[in-house]
Length: 298
Image (cartoon, rainbow, N blue to C red; front, side, top):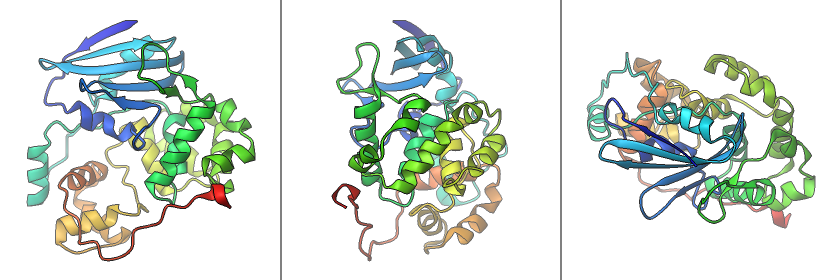
């Protein structure tokens, strides 16, 4: 086991910082235990690792196991938003100012790992979360490695890119992912080394969007997590434009309308959308919910 203690230089909500890396209930790569600690697995450049993050007395403690333990601990401050630059961000709406006040500990962290963010983002394309998370759980249970160390039961480490390339069609089907998403992940896995080597969010955006099946939404979802990009707004999200529009104007809007509303926050549009999501303001639900599909029965 390796251990590190870190003291943030300002307010920090560890749960908010790590929440974007959780893929639904029962995520094999993310777990919160009754003591409040958050466990996370990662396939680092040094190999698989598990890290337990806990907070006491304003100090963050990381305990890590596995070949990649030191790498995970070295990246702990960045994962929790130590490199998050909020300069230039000014809340210009009352509701946003209140959200910033209530959630002063919100920080956008960065993992530096592309494939672990890309695969679940592709699985989430144009489907409800429960459908994507079911596929993620099945694939990690079947192809992921057991988490190193005394991790909670069932935790797994995301597979190597070579494994994603070799998953047979019938196992994609059993997971609930149809051919289009399966091919997108397999194709990206062939380019994993180049993707992981991207030095900036802009470079990663260019590389991702050059691949078939990856567009603006998927690229933004990945860059938010890999680089902690505060401006990578998820255009094309099923709910986000409605949430932003209703929070700021009391009316629903579409993606172009959302971008107009967030223009004053350019450079921090993703950050602004995170705070607006935390307000809990939603328009009244009047239509049917998007159904969970099950390709396994097709």
